[in-house]
Image (cartoon, rainbow, N blue to C red; front, top):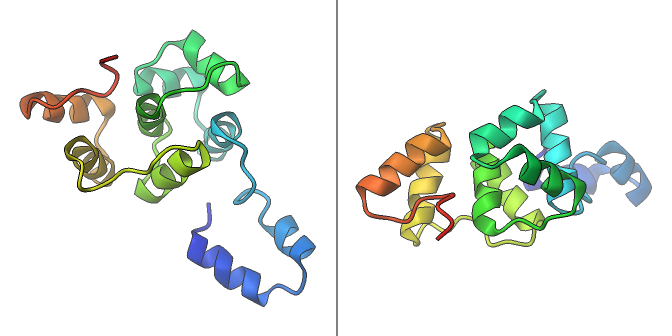
Length: 142
């Protein structure tokens, strides 16, 4: 996915809005978690079941999110970012498109999450770090 800066520069060089949209359909106009999840699953060649497992959510719940039946919480969206192997920029974009606040470095749990994503840690590794610091785990349901 192109960065906002790349899109902006390309937009300035494109003659018409129609041409810009045509050339960047995959980078703009996502309508929430289901559409963006499908995009990442396809573009990163992932399997739904593996995404859900790495996100620590059940297959049934994951399919309900993908179908639009369920509207996941911010925590579940962050868990999905781990399952989708998103980098920090992709994670922030994913949360924004899904109508949630991005990760905020002045909030302890978010700060540990940012570093976990930056360091390509798994959700399990992040939760171990959080547990060691006495911070609420992702996926704890609390």
